Image 1: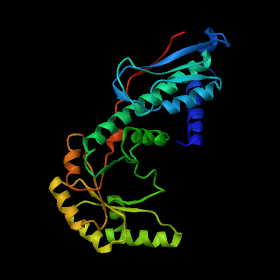
Image 2 (image 1 turned 90 degrees about the horizontal axis):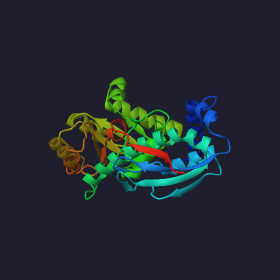
Image 3 (image 1 turned 180 degrees about the horizontal axis):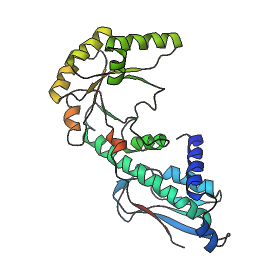
Image 4 (image 1 turned 90 degrees about the vertical axis):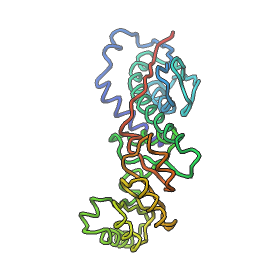
Length: 281
C-alpha cells in the first residue's frame, strides 16, 4: 500500500476520533505509562490489515514494539492472537479503535473474497472488485480484496474507461459512445483500456461491429446467454460477466467461459469480523 495514503488516512481518522484529546486516557493514565496488548481474534476470518496496524502504532508511538504472530492473508479462528504490541498506554488507547475498525472491515472483505476465489480456483477466470467501495478508504478495501485472493479492477474513473448503460443512453448509442471515446483518447494522447457494457445480444453485436475496445461486460446475462455471447465474441475481446453475482451462482457463471467476473458484493455487502485489543500487562 502507498505509505503516503496510509499516513493521510491515519491523520484524518485520528483527528476525527481524538479531536482535542482522548480525555479519558489523559485523565486516568500517567503520561509515562507503557502497556502490552494483544490483538485477539473473536471470529473465524481471513486476517487483513495487520500491516496497516503496524503503521498506526508506529504513528502514535514511534517506540512501539510489535510481535507479529500472524500475517495478512492467514486464516484465523476464535481465540487466535494475531500480534502483541507494547507502547505508551495513552497512545495505545488512541490507536485502539482505529486499528480495530480498519482491521475488522478489511478482514470481512478478505474473508468474503477468499470464499469467491475458492469457488473458482480451478477455472481460468479472475474475480474482480468494483468501485462500490467506501469513500476515502477504497485503497484499503481494494487491498483487502487482494489479500483475500481476488483482483482489483479499475482504481477509479481515471485509470480505465468503462462505457456503461448510462453513458450509452446519454451518448445516444453504443457506436456514438465508442467513437467519441476513441476520438477523446487520440486528442488527449491517452491509451486507457476500454470496457463496454452490453445488456443484450443486439448491443453485443453493435460493439463487435465497432471493435477497438479491450473488454465486453455482459451485464445481467443468463448463464445460457453468457455462453452464447462468449461463443459469438470468440476470443476477439476479453469477456466479463457482471450483475447479480453471488457465491451460489459464481461457479456456474465461471463455467460459461468468461474471462472475468466482477462482484460488487466483495466490498459493498460484507460484515466486519470481530477483533479485540486487550491489555495483558
